Length: 108
Length: 112
Image 1 (cartoon, each protein chain N blue to C red):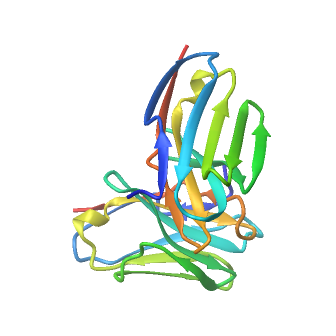
Image 2: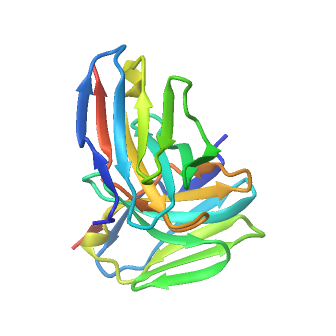
C-alpha cells in the first residue's frame, strides 16, 4: 500500500488550460512538498505546506489536513510547465514518502 | 542553479565495488538529505543529517552509509554494489527542518 497516492498519472492539456493534480496521503504529516522534475532529471521544490494555501506566480497549492489531501493547480498552463510533478510528505515519524508522480504535457 | 552541488555527475562501476557520492549543501544550510530514484521504485528517502548528526533514516540498505562532515558537506558510501543499485542519487539541503529543500543535480550511478 502506498502512503501517497497521486492522480492523474498522466495529463495532457492545451496551452492556457487550468490544471489540477491531486495528492492523497494516509499518514500523519508535519509537511507536504510539491516537487517538479523536468525531463533532464533535475528536481525543483515548488511548495512546502503544512496548512492552508500557497501561491507562486501561476502555481497554487492547497492542503486539507483533516481530509489528508492536497492539490496543485496551474493556471494558464504553458508548454514549459511540461514536467513530472511529485507529491511528497514528511510523516510525524520523520519519514519521507513520495507519490509516483504526474506526468504533465502541455501542447501549444 | 539550486546552490547544491553533487559529484560526480555520472559513475559507472561493476558489481561488488564500492563508490562514494559527494554533496555540498547550499551555503548556510545545516540539513542534508539523500534520496534514491530508480525506474521501478521511484523516489525513496535514504537518510537525513542535521548539523553533523543523523536525524532520520529511511530505506537505506545496510550496504550503504552516509555522514555529514564539520564543513557540512556529506558523503554517501555504497558498497558491495548490485545491479539493482543503478539509480539517480539526489542530495538536497535545507536551512532547518522541516523546511523547503533544494535539490542537487544528482549522480547517475550505473552498476554493470
